[in-house]
Length: 340
Ligand code: JHZ
Image (cartoon, rainbow, N blue to C red; front, side):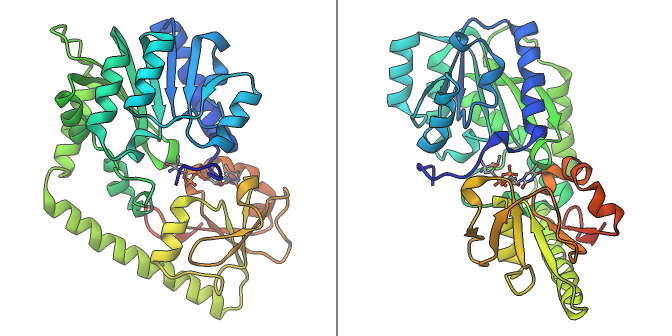
């Protein structure tokens, strides 16, 4: 999957770029790391906020890693595994900050992931990871977070269990709106210093209260997902009967999951607009909807847009003020399908 034609670019949204910039400022001010490692540095959206010789990135997708290299940032086209950890350790020694966003949840062997993190982290070093929050997925019915790239969708409860097995522990949790609702976990080596922040205890309490540790919760979620599918399909069937042209906006991996699960294909959606070059002039997998370059203008005869990049709703609605002003509407699926 993570080959040299991988299409995801973290720089394709100002929401993500701004979030990384904010985090970088906090890291520089509060943690003052001497040397930082980013696992899954993508196109350098996080790295570019730091002094070039203070941060190292690893990114296995060569097409993306090349972009970061062109920004004169120090990256290596490598997967996160034993070999890479050994190479980094011999070349750079230990890191006092390791950052990884939307990456570790894509790697199957988490014990190996965290064993290598432990070995590369200095004694007082901090690992910060960001990933979609299982609690938010269940609350918002965002079943589209469950697809082939996401081997896991982390809960704080489960993640802390795996970390403890590898002599690490979460000491702070921040909730982010990024990617439809993510958690930012601050992680350190287990020590007798119990500076566990109350935000961690609150997250654990909320997850248990919601029922994340109870199998019944997931059967109820499955029922809501099927209800969501029927509702979304009925919206598209109705719009088609009324002869409305519908287009898609943001050909996300997430929306591919929705379209295939709900059997919404090129009979219902004319084409998708997307800003990512590597996706343009291709087709959505399984549903064969053409993806074309976004050109700052929505065709006049379009009245309905299916919001594939719903995780960037605020950013996109701001951008499409003109379309909304002329009566244009968006079809969203979370928390329940509706036209806004
Ligand atoms: P976006 C990827 O998922 C895959 P995807 C991965 N597995 C993951 O976990 C998340 O990212 C982090 C377009 N767009 O970022 C750009 C516009 O066209 O949610 C993107 O193609 N106009 C690593 O694929 C897509 O939408 C806009 O104004 O779900 C967003 O995809 C904006 C803001 C985006 O990633």
